Amino acid sequence: MRKWFVVAILGAAQFVMVLDGTVMNVSISTVVEDLDTTVAAMQTAITFYTLTMAAFMLLGAKLGDVWGRRRAFVIGSIIYAIGSGSTALAPDFQVLFLGWSVIEGLGAVLVIPSIAALVADNYQGKDRITGFAVIGAVSGGAVAAGPLIGGFVTTYLSWRYVFAAEVVIMAAVVLTARFVTDGTPRQSIRIDVLSVLLSAAGLVFVVSGMLQSKTWGWVRPLVSPEINGVAIQPLGISMTAWFIALGAVLLYLFVRRQAALVARGRPPLVHVSLFSIERLRSGLSVLGAQYTITAGLFFMVPVYLQMTLGLDALETGIRIFPLSVSLVLFSIVGTRLSALWSARKIVRVAQWILVASSIVLLSAVEPQLNTVPFGFGMFFAGAALGLLASQLGNVNMSSVSEQQTSEVGGLQGVSQNLGSSLGTALIGSVLIAALSASFMSGVTSSDLPQAVQDQVVEQSQGGIEIVPASSVAQIAADAGLSTSDGEKLTAIYTDSQLSSLRTAFFALIAIAVAALMLSRGIPNDAPVRTPGKRGRRPQKGTTAS
Image 1 (cartoon, rainbow, N blue to C red):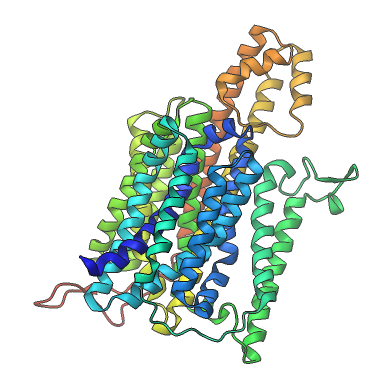
Image 2: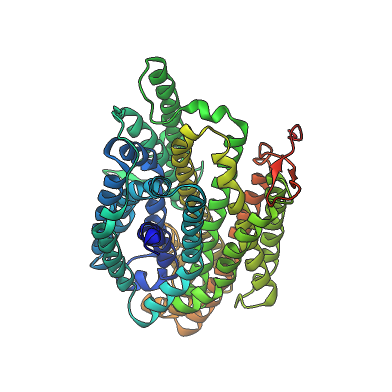
């Protein structure tokens, strides 16, 4: 058992990394109340937690090469613990954002790339395979247990205790890290700062633009940011479009910069020539889409359960548990299926299941979200995501030589976290924008007195906040409306929340359908059983385009 002590240390860090995001999702309403903030602000915090990792993951992988993987792992763990401690003690949203979204994210970009490399350094042969399997199982366990752990602790203690416990776990990881062997020689690499700035700024502008689309509008300005009272909307175009365009330009310049560095014989932040490998390009694209859908589901469903139905964090965790457990279960099933089906067949089947389950979820949307069809929809959505998870890592890693796996691992981290950022930013913004549009339409078409309609429209010009449906009547009373008008507003708002949830599910269907076009490059090698042996080998010459 002593030889598995190292994987236990690395697994503890991996568990914390995966657990962290799920806790905040099931605790949204409680954190909003405790810190006197809004759901839109929490959407920003959740988005930037994964965006920080996406923006700096390639840098984190390079720093691991320069400093040594164990040193990077320890430094990242210390930074992560500082961020968790700040989050646990956060007196307001600003401190939570700094501690969780920024500091923890920066710690994670050092920890996550180091874990896989350190497993490879400390184990050989079958033990290495077992080590990677343990890390994968820990990740799956955190996905399944995270909503329940976070929900239980938030409901009966406080969400702060989860982050305090993370400090303790990461402290134990740091103290025991000396038992982890770092057998990879350090590299003398000059990291190009301009590349880091271009890639990080490009991703931040793209995702921030999508995040603000609910307020600014996509192309036609709705509400524009102001400087000295002057609305900023160049050429009459929303800042959302300008942010996304600027981000795209910066990412283009990043790609050009990498090519220029290679031409000069300098090490790039990433070899962009890797994107010419079709199976890798396809695998990373589908991986990003998978995480976009996962993050979207884990944001919009808990928001509705808590802010409309008034469920607590534990009840929310239980409601989304079918998705979590099926994701883990079918990641194992997918691994078994790989002995019978090609990776592309498994991915395509998973994608079609995801489209079908999203349609089922849309059709099953009703006020309480507790019907059998909705439960089946969540379960099979998780099954599809689990099947995808079982294939894409191997597809990506097997696309390159062993010397390039570290770089591809960094690209996978970028795809996963960028997908999560886009899922929360895009689906969350669709949800909030649809709520505003539906609520305003419901108010103006209602039989409320014209004076009340005008008052609501005027106070809602800057957008509608997601608040508990049960609180609308009191908000209306505070605004001087009568009890009957307050009841009508509550009914309109509740219907609007349900309508916005349907719109968000439709957006998920669109993403799932679009992802089908991204999987063409997934290898279609047919598995062939070797007589007398277990396992599979690829059938040569069967890869279809």
